[in-house]
Length: 240
Image (tube, rainbow, N blue to C red; front, top):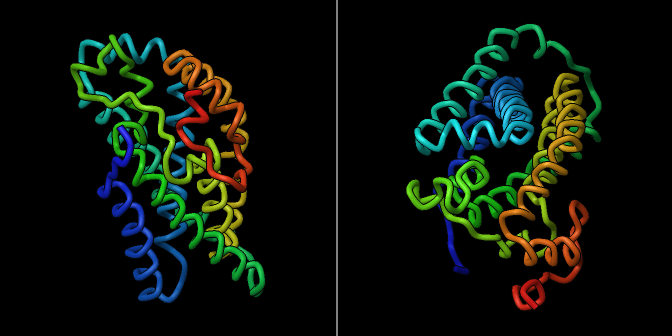
């Protein structure tokens, strides 16, 4: 169904950066924003590396346990564990910085603002279940119906221009935060995120082809993976 909007994840995404940015302004230095970005995307890298390569295992393990079990594993275990490690090590890696490159900070600030805005737009169209991998882990006939996990190829918002708007904005956001806060660790994290995507995307696209079939293959033919097209695609073109 078209026109679905999921305000909660979009609002939470924007609010996270507003709160962190305001906190850093009060502190007078970059602490909360780079810590949030490192924890969020460090956890994302761990989750991605432990999900798609062994998708069949997770589907079998979760089939009897349900959606809540996955959210506990993902949010509490993988994201939470990564965050704890990064917080413990924060006094060390937050010190990896350089000084006085104002043009790079301006570029970084623009990247952050644009990435948060486009990322919120994408979150508005996706919803929690798809953002947190539930769509892949609970496909039709294997838990989607029981757990009320929507199975829909999103062809709205930024997805009309590029297949992976969140991956584009994720990379730009990590890099932009690194430039803005002048933290070497985040520049390295951006490189690690790009390397992880190179491993993940073939597996993810294979799984999406299996779930959505010809419409997804047609979507891939029409819409670039990373570089946005100038004219938005429409559903009639994809389903033709």
